[in-house]
Length: 90
Image 1 (cartoon, rainbow, N blue to C red):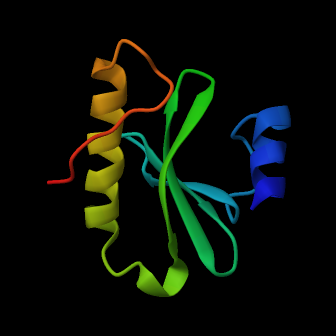
Image 2: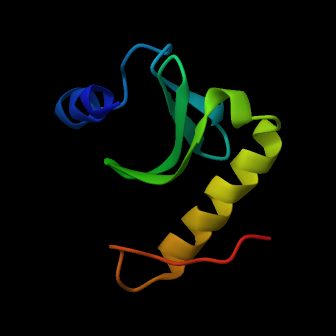
């Protein structure tokens, strides 16, 4: 997974869709993928902010994961300090 992060840092998010893809492009939720791991995130300009991760076998409902990403994004955007943001899940 670190290699995926490094590639994204060097080349942006226009990478192989097998490794980085939108959950819902219009809403701005994305996932990094490996064979067994999913790291969910959103973009803020050129910055990719990771929100949470799960094993592939644990992902049952992408709509629920999308809601978690969007809740974290909203908390991030509302925060004056954009480093570490705590938010409560719905």
